[in-house]
Length: 339
Image 1 (cartoon, rainbow, N blue to C red):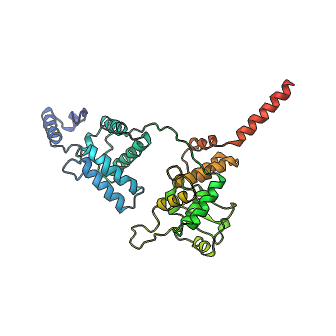
Image 2 (image 1 turned 135 degrees about the vertical axis):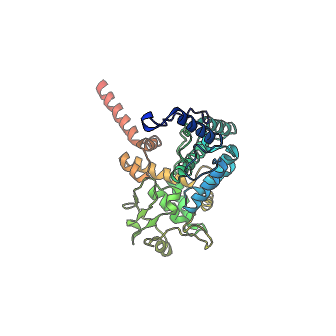
Image 3 (image 1 turned 120 degrees about the vertical axis):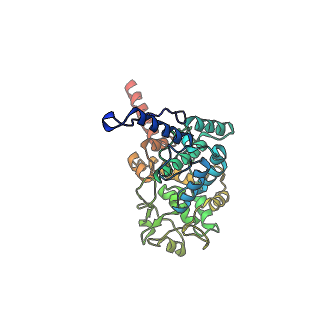
């Protein structure tokens, strides 16, 4: 038995020279390996890997390779995962331990969605360790909680106009362009930050993002071009360059990492609630408009970058005049038949 798991191993056949005495000697050697904790270690390791050590290695590895979502992963690991699992040996991690962590987080008032983000980081840490040969295998399955579908918040026409105007007047020189990307491409916040515009005309621009989840670029062609100053249009014509370069020379990234504070200022200036209207609302708005205009769901999925068509179907319940029109036509048909 090793870590509550029974080990079965074939040592060899008698025709290959294996004897009872030789087998017993080999079994004693295996027991010694188990006793000193070296039986399940990858090649090159002499001591067992503990969670805190792996967590520190993972954060450094992500920093060195420009890993994504580091602003959220750092607190997830340093403030929650690492303090809870501490110096537990990674090989002994089980679904029971993960389940206790989930229960502790839920009892502390965290939502299932928040806990799932922690679990996603934990899963990525373990799989990354396997790929980098730090672990022989993932020690256990990482579960995922069912998340209640939240209400999709969108912007109305008057709110869009107010937000655009507030973004133009905001001190941040690129906020207006960030808002236009959000409303016209359905991109996520991080995707907009890394985007490029490759065109000499705003009305024929194509927003490119090499690291996008969905893979394909979202075209802004055939949409109403924004009206801005000549200086603003010049910024949007920077072919092959970041549209949102870092504003400070000391920045560790080549592009603007977040527009959250600037966007919050614009939302307040537009008379909206900053707790409700976040940058992601622009993505919801763009996708909802596509659905309302009758775009095929497969096309919407390609533009939005959703992994499944079921995720796009959520937007059909936000505002679907086609369903109302169909029900009205059905009602007229039934009325005529009765007459």
